[in-house]
Length: 607
Image (tube, rainbow, N blue to C red):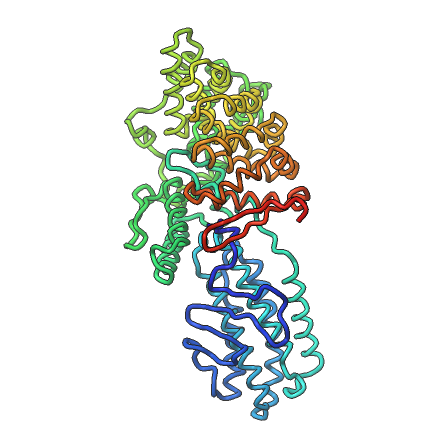
């Protein structure tokens, strides 16, 4: 199965594979309208077009354009294309205005041409309405398929307007030139290659392929939420309704519906919403009964505790922290800024009145109340304390093997289950100690150490700290020589670290790409998924695409496309598409041929 955001046109859209002649036209199929202009008929579902008054025909066509112009809130993934289509449809309004002046004397040939044009306007309206009301997640997954539908509308519109008998209708030269210019622009736009949002594509791939045991990088969730305009509880309610309607149209077991629902559920789990069956009445999440705001402004969170600040203060570096948290930091004989790591000129604290007022206003507006001590406790009923964290970090350096193993295992679990602990562990110098344990001869200690670094790397500030400790080459060493579990988590850690562009370069220069390709060849199913995900993210850097090809990534990708049982066909094909954007990849394109028996590939160096 081809990746939903890179896949070929779905069966509902059937454009011809070569340039259309003047006597042919694209057939564009929708559920409630099926139009084939080659036969000149309207099939079941297209009402009120045949045998109608000329004036009604013109008026209804104008109404379709006006309806399309009133649509708004187009989904971000199709927004630009929607506004472009609406803008061009508006150009037809003066065309219809002049036809009205011609009255009832429109010749039969012209009426037939105008009827065809109305059919195209119906298709355009349905497409625009889908992009306005449809599921944001589904439309993001179906970006390429939706683009094919837009192109089908453009092709039909050009065909009908090319065959329009302008002389019989007696429109002015000026209006005719405007319409012909629009047709030229449509054809030029269709030839222009659609530019896909590769960051959106890789983020969708990541959230789709992450296993339940893994912690999804919060940066991925935030980017997706921002790009898909999913910010509030109300947004998620609307998305749930849109997916429910989609399921009614396509069936609850449809692959595209199932995938979109799975992504929606992952969003909800990660962002703290209650996951319910979307085909039943949604239950309001308990934790959001008081606050309708899903995303707390980042500026309101203390960098140390990651909680909304009660008493924000500014320190010498210009950064703002919760007073109690930064005072504890200073009381522990620290003289650096926890966020920037720079040495401070003084330890004075200045109240940040402006930010405190903003937090107060936001809290009142959203009925937000600061959590109590009970709210901050872990599921086991214990709250992580800085003293406990410091003690665990000290035990990492213990000469006793059992003490080291217990400490690193506890850090692994705490950094997984309690996100707020990740900053605290970094502040207590856990990262250098964990990096040292990556070279430990005990495989279990090594496994827990690399997994702890994976969990810590989810915090953006920790990504830089881990790289600064020169951990990347050592992680790559574990990727090459560790146990299978350690190799899998090393690949996942490299993916997380590669979210920073500078780390993409460091990983590549440290020979991380060949090591990931080797895991792609010899790893477990989970290891292969981790490897291809990390390689995809690394290859967003142009130079790394050539490195991946030179490292021999193509043969294992071909095997992954062949073996559907592994379930990594989507990721492998997405990787092929990404490599093809590099000159070296285009010179050595992989020809992928499909038949009834499955997928067959051929790597053609000269093709």
